[in-house]
Image (cartoon, rainbow, N blue to C red; front, side, top):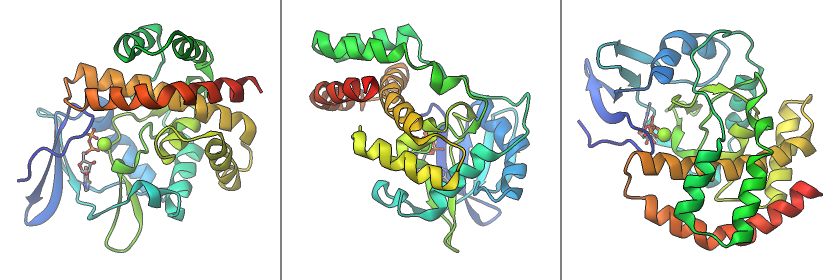
Amino acid sequence: MSDNLAKMGAARVCRTSYHGIECIEKSQASNVEFQFYLQVAPAFRRAGIGVPELLASDTTTQTLTLEYIPYPIGQDALLQNPDVLSTIACIHQFLGNEGGIFKRHTWLRDKTERALELLKLPDESAAIISETEKLSACLFSPSTLISGDTNAGNWGIREQGSAVLYDWERFSTGSPAIDLAPLIKGMGNIADFVHIAKRYQEVSPYCHSPALAQEIAICKLWVVTEVIDILYRNNKVELNKYLDWYRFNLPAWLQKLRFFLNA
Ligand SMILES: Nc1ncnc2c1ncn2[C@@H]1O[C@H](COP(=O)(O)OP(=O)(O)O)[C@@H](O)[C@H]1O
Ligand SMILES: [Mg+2]
């Protein structure tokens, strides 16, 4: 069995074998992810959404034994892979699953306060973060199904070449922007937000790409507060590395965000 592969989450993830088949074992999985694999994944697979096969599950330890997806997709390759955007659009177009078990995504004041306390940014930057938090309801009100975590570390490619999304801990409803923002490397810039919103409109013609681009920008900042919160709550050693990176990069990025959101 491999060492714990878990990244941000609290579950334990190991590479092991099940009846001689290479697999991934995720134990202490969240209820949202556990129920996703039992209740939603079969319908998603039938709709053509790439989800690992569930080889076994154990309710007492909340353990999922999942098909091992051999090849990772790097951040730079995400947007080059046509399966990625079409998989995301397919999730968003999926109808049904009323009354499902979802992670409830919100951007509450306490997360902003925690982030500001740890980041110690200049006052002007802190003010933009607080202003943006007040605009964030547009991310959480839609009833569209979302993966909630499409970052590059959660995608893999099967031997036959198709893309698969694992890690359904943040499965929820919300704006498509929540699934599009992670496709952009780092904090991204305005041109990136506009570009990805237009690319998405090609596979999802009813979306309004200028509004979506702004939601993607807001989402990028929400993710900063989420990452800080998760790393802090799970006592992850990477917290300081992230804080340093944000301190260096956020002030100039926030100025551009304010301009974009007020345009
Ligand atoms: N089905 C899978 N096939 C191959 N690798 C996987 C699979 N599931 C998880 N992994 C690996 O384990 C890592 C952590 O698993 P993940 O489900 O993303 O948990 P976390 O919530 O910690 O991010 C992934 O980034 C990936 O490297
Ligand atoms: Mg993950």
